[in-house]
Image (cartoon, rainbow, N blue to C red):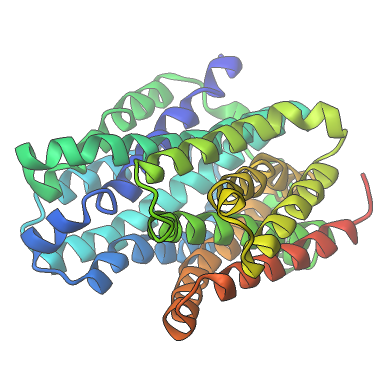
Amino acid sequence: MTRALRYVPHLAAAGVGYVLFAYAAIPSVVVAELGAGYAQLGLLTSAPLLSFALVQPVGGRLLERHPAADVLMWATLAHAGLTVALSVAPTYPVALALRVAWGLAAGLLIGAGATHLARLAEGAAATRQQGVFGGMITLGGAVAFALAPRLAPLVGSSGTQAPGVALAVPAALALAAMDRRPTAPTATAGDGPALSVLANPAVAAAALAYVAIIGSYVTLSTFITAYVADLGLVGPLNVLVLLVATAGRAGGGAALPLVTSDRRLTAGSLVVATAGFGVLAVGPGPALVAGLPLVAMLAVTAPFGAVYTLAASATDMEGTAIAAVLAAGNLAAVVLPTVAGALRDATGGYGGGFALLAAVDALAVLAVLAVREV
């Protein structure tokens, strides 16, 4: 039964990834049907990410008091119900309000899912499971980019959200039928102060690394299509980028035995990302420009699972640690694309945005290397 419990979060995570990116896959349809401008369209993606961050303090406390599988079950049901509501949203204000509420449920789901896995596995097995968990989120996004444009003519822009329910309901039903006690917190974990977790050097370093990982991932996903289009290249690049991200997240956990520790995997991957963004910032030849964003995406997604394990293994209060990491990363995902876009508007190019990402990744490398090996 414990083995079966490990697979359920992956089902729910794929549904979250699908809903998160479904509107972004059909921008012209959303603008036409909901009467939204492109700035308002961006809010449909950034507002849930802010909700992801804001719900984490509450999520962390819940996870220190209840089995992670209990929190995951109820969060998955809330995600499913709000997705159904989104699928019939008649106007932009209604859709935006529902996306904000959905982000709270989805953020709780992701935090509970990651904590759920941290309580069921240790070491390399935990990192591998966390990597697959993250890969399922991006795989769901890739499916949204491929499927939503085909559904939109049949069901409208809001109706494209509905497939996000397809995996959520089976996941919730499976959890309801299982013994969820193996994901309970330790007897004393809930008694500790949250500030002691935030002050833990490994948790702080993991949070900064997650800022680099998620901030770089979302920023690159946001601008990659327009960036490469400026080179005269066309194709389903949004799908390709998310598939690369999926491979990076899932493959990072599998590669852990080769680099021996979560700390080394995180630092090494972000060194590659720093170099990739640094070269892009100074403007290399067209061949490198076309390929380096994919290399950088692979590098910033490979340590996804390692960062969760690095934070969770540093304290008995793994729910609070993972919540802190999630909050930091998702706040960065709201801020960094906006700053990168402002730099693009001010300079007419993407060099400033790439330089920003290189700097953030480099700071994360220094923070992770400063943590003592365990």
